[in-house]
Length: 415
Image (cartoon, rainbow, N blue to C red; front, side):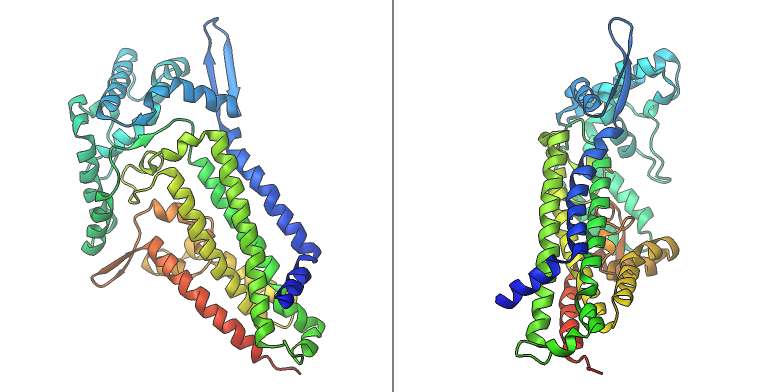
């Protein structure tokens, strides 16, 4: 325990470590607040004057005018919204709501706007996947809205996983467990989740920078030549360095994510945590999560991904003789999922993204996006949903890299 305290003190006394940990804290509040600034709305008040609201005032206004959409998404609410849309379009001779004047849209369409997308998607063309035109949906069909969602997931998976019936069946089985009817509360947008993804990306990047010199700095300074000859050198010291790195990075990650969720949900309203993710992303999203459950899942899965990433970074550090080399290679592996996503499409790219430990905390392949996607790893008649595969690989890698770190450090030769 004394050795662990000394190692923690040694790492935390480093100026760069303190700067990065303070940056984590700064970005916690900055990233949680930023999505609220993107909200704005302009309308004409009762006196005929133009009013422009921004930020939290805009969110509050939207929640007030869309209050009738809050709660359970019943067929009655959907039918009412559909009839308002169609009557308004017919009255003004518009082909879509985008052709309406801003004042007309704000007064008649905006109060029901959150329900517009899910109806178009549920009644999409089963052959082409094109969303239905709002004027082509029969209000009498709305009673079968949730049955249409079940039909939609079946037709969608035939397109997404055309040659893989196992993936199709697995997706349909997953979707059968989705809680229906959906729940919705106005005010929240997916931009807040996007910023949580970017925030996690930065925390993991800073963790890589913190852990990269853990072993290589002693190699570079020559201190390791002396330390490994002492009573607590080699295995015990190696374990201590790994544990101290995990404690520092994990503590910062957990604390900052808790603060982010507390601030973000307080700004948008805690009732939004009850929103079915099908009402935020795709009406046929596979997980049976509400927003609060999705936030928790992303933090937990990203934590495992971060631990696997810093384990890889520590292994690299145990192999490199200079800080520059360990930091450069560590950052290269951290950014590798971005390169793979952009340059290697198809099944090979999906496999690589599942295997690379930092994929779940990267920008394009983060858990937020794979949870709402329909990608599978297909192995013969076996289909594994990519979020499950990513978590499975990172757990294995965490164990394997930890063992490799200790073997590499203990086998390091003094020259």
